[in-house]
Image (tube, rainbow, N blue to C red; front, side, top):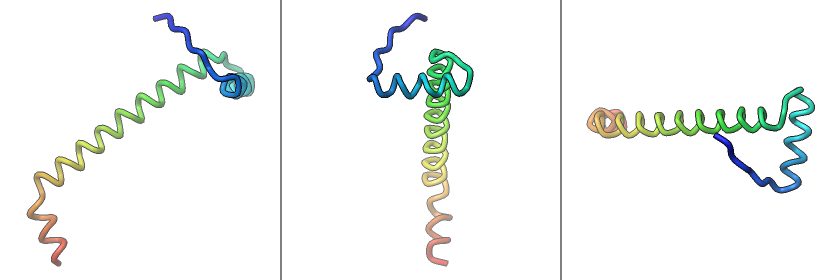
Length: 68
């Protein structure tokens, strides 16, 4: 899908430097960054869900461990 992104000059310059150093296009750098962000966000949501599950389902056990 086509998309136009307007970046502040400083960020554009940073992306240009990164792309040059990695022998990639700025487009490829942005795709990689967006993919990492999406994956990190998904992992965070899974961890939050797992913690909520443990807190809900093991409440009594956690309270006993707290008193030990």
